[in-house]
Image (tube, rainbow, N blue to C red; front, side, top):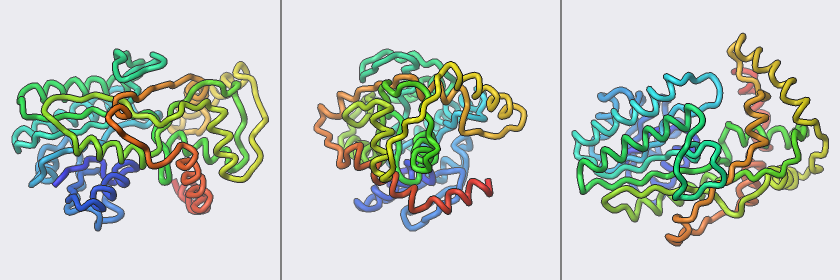
Length: 329
């Protein structure tokens, strides 16, 4: 049996269903209750910082796929990133050692590279925010754990931004704005934005699971080809059957305007969709190459266009429910 932490989340949901389809028994550990209990053998609602919860979830398992993390770009303090991501993982590792679990797959992030562009599997990490720093420190803890026992097998997977149906993060905001014809260009859109469709990422993880060997394998994941922001926006508009957005505002005007929302967010604690950090991020290249996974023979089932077609279709068919959920939030 395999333990998936964060199994009630976006990627975790896809991963547990894929494991169940291939006949693998799955145990889950998540802060949330499980929306579809049929896809897992057991589900423990608990915190990865709690060794008792980790121990209950880890019974009869021989491998851990670790997804649970603090990862939002708003409302999370530096202390929380390191407490959840680093100390939570160390708790899992201690319990795994005690229960003789020797296989560990960790979903890290290309955020460990910081502003280094472009990156590949051999690029030296240089994080420039707390999320990336906490992910890198977690990687180091996992490598130390692996080195304690020559029979332990570890995969550290560093995906770029992951998108697909049911995701509610940054790509979701972009899909929503374009589909609702509320998108306004800031900048020229010429910067590269590496992306990864969720089902491709899950397929890559399953392939790596089947090839685990003693030691530590660290590698990136991103889909091909590398697209610019403009190309991605054009694809979303085309899949939605609407005109490609053309309205623009200079970055020099957008950033001061967005700082109003920064202040309001600080005062009210609300997560506004427009912030100066998100505008800067939108205009920053994030070019991350995944060489090792493709050299291993991995072939994505879905193109980036097919992934966005699925994402746009899901958004348009659930738009009313999503708008209602946002109102209730």
